[in-house]
Image (cartoon, rainbow, N blue to C red; front, top):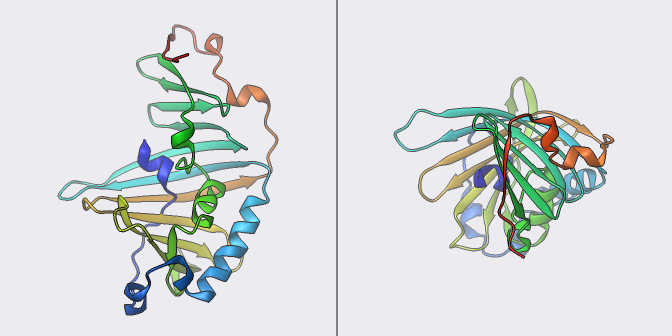
Length: 226
């Protein structure tokens, strides 16, 4: 689940240029890539809410790829995520983790130390990018699913980061974020492709609260620590 929290990913690889390896700080980022990312950031951060359907592909060394599909609804710090047997809801203060098949729900307080890394949406990823933790390499133009896209590679400034690079795909015409691929130092690859995104959708408070009566037979464990 941490990988879903940490990325929005893409399925195609690009060739890293020699210039990428010369970068050392966020200030060394390619100006063209920075401008495109800034435009995208302003676009997504301007949304009041987001609903998205996505496909997550997990590739581990010497293992078959695992493909999972899911949906997420987000507004401010609240979100409602469903993927396979997992259903996670948070109102920004409480987090409900629902294991659907076992009919088990665990309630926890949201950990403020981890909230900065929760990247369920483009907005959160772009807020993290804004912190100057990445170096942007020059843009590569390519085709993905028959559409022209911009590929931008991001390298974490922190050499001890769990991920050594990310590759972002942007729609050229709309500058929409299509996907991001995360490269882990242990050889794993995580690709989260946005299949459909609806911005500025209206949600009720009920969307971001787990109501046990809506799930007959569910067992609720309150793990909150006062």
